[in-house]
Image (spheres, rainbow, N blue to C red):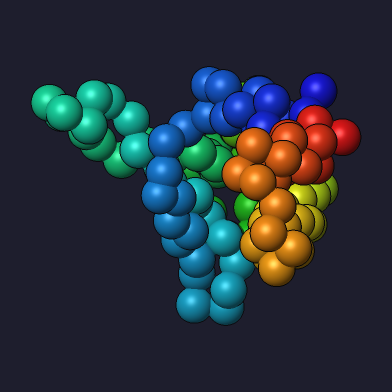
Length: 121
């Protein structure tokens, strides 16, 4: 699977963004929100990461919390940590290849072939 296919795969079923993080004053996260619905007709906020409080004290800060996240969002979060640096390096390599091709007067067809090689490695 090339870098573009990897990026496409980890986005399938993921909660749309932008994602926002809500924290307590001390920096602890209590919610990560995204967007659902149809952006053309009706869109609304939804929790990406949901902290469920099982007690009745209402504190949500010192009691035990159950944290849930969809499988697609979990996959996205865990795989993004390695995919983003890989995408960054691929983009740098593509830009360097294009720069070198321009300096050498390489044809657009050959430059495109170089770029495709970088992307599919």
